[in-house]
Image 1 (cartoon, rainbow, N blue to C red):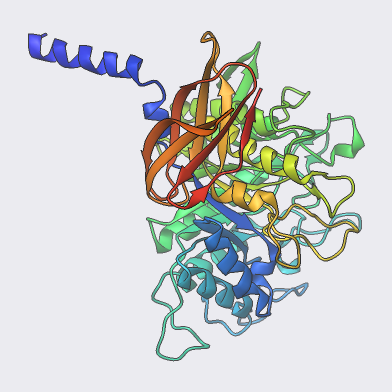
Image 2 (cartoon, rainbow, N blue to C red; image 1 turned 45 degrees about the horizontal axis):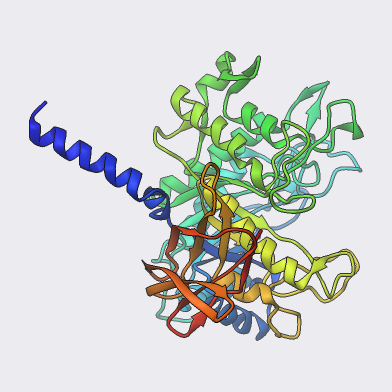
Amino acid sequence: MSRRLTGLLLCFALLAVAAPGVAEAARGLKLGYYDSVFVADSPLRGLWMDRAVNDGSDIVRINVSWPAPDTRQRPRGFDARNPADPAYGFARADAAIIDAKERGLKVLAAVSRAPRWAEGAHRPRNAREGSWRPSPNALKEYAIALTRRYSGDFPDPARPGRTLPRVDAFQAWNEPNLNIFLAPQRSRGRLFAPAHYRRMLNAFYRGVKSVRRSATVVTAGLAPYGDDADFAAGRRTRPALFTRVMLCVRKVKGQLRRARRSRCRRAPARFDVLAHHPYSVGRPSRPALNVDDVSIPDIHKLRRILRVAERTGGALPRKRHRLWVTEISYDSSPPNPRGVSLARHARWLQETLYLLWRQEVDTIMWYQIRDQPRLDRTRQAGTFFIGGKPKPAARAFRFPLVAERTRGRRGSLRVWGRSPVKGKVRIERRTSRGWRRVRTVRAREHGTFLVRVRGRGHTDLRARVGAEKSLVWHAR
């Protein structure tokens, strides 16, 4: 090895020691919302999309569903691959996607619920409509129509002479480890849903990629908790178990290994992004009790399974797949008396973003932007009240800041954040004489930063960039 090369390697090593976290901070984080108001047929849609942009969003998740005729038999003459077939009902999705793209937002188009003719035979009465053994081939045909419609070249029926915008990311289904979305979870005493979902995912992938190779295919976000096989009649499959079976990985004595089933090896899962919905019971740092459940601090379980599958061929194409969280939130009080206080709601939102980012999640969608109208069986997790007044969580979403004690370094804090605008971010500490700057770091618009500052005992920190200030973070 030459002296010059040796010197370069030594310099890189010294830089890594002198500036810990630099490589981590370079990892970006896209934020967005998932909310039914984005597909509402009213002027409120545009109003709330404007607020999403002002709140620092990069992306929105829009449920385009499967707008085909919901009849028992497939309609005669229906061309499922043709997005212009008059039997399709894309009008609401068209309007939502146009509004989002005109505001510079990226769109994740999510698909769920099969029409009756695309379900398996003999759906039992206790199975939810649209969930029973959806046909992979029918889903592939719909994926072709969906990708063609939002390819950027398809004529807009409502605006002659113009085309519909292009969508770059498509999500195949929602929470298939719950029987309300994919049934049955088990059949004849064995797991059924993970392998069937793999067939659905592969069919969806082939459909999307046959139209546009550059489009991103996202797996369905899994629900965070499941049941044991002999409990609750198998209504929920634990997400880590579901993912292992889906990706042909098995667990043996605490280690992850490749499954030996030839059928799985012949048709491994194909996708670009692995998604999850890691709702937590209690504070964001609280892990799930069961080893196969996955809440906020447990994403590493899915990441480990994914990396094994990438090495062994259970996750194709051969590349490093990304991790997204396409749904996460906490309810606040007010308006939900069972929710957490407004201050804790904002703090937990920021902590959630940081913990997920630290585990290599690069896109997170909060559910929702505004509280829902009724408390009965609705979510009150918005960063805004339903009337439009922002909660503290709105500023936390736009300019998150988190500080945590570093292990092995007394009086040292790791400070993470995401800047709402491009510029010099000032990290400030509260003193007896007011706020004092302790660190400055440059950040891109919506860019993350990670620095280390001194701080013993209880320390109050905040960040400033331009005229914007983060909420105060109380480091304990």
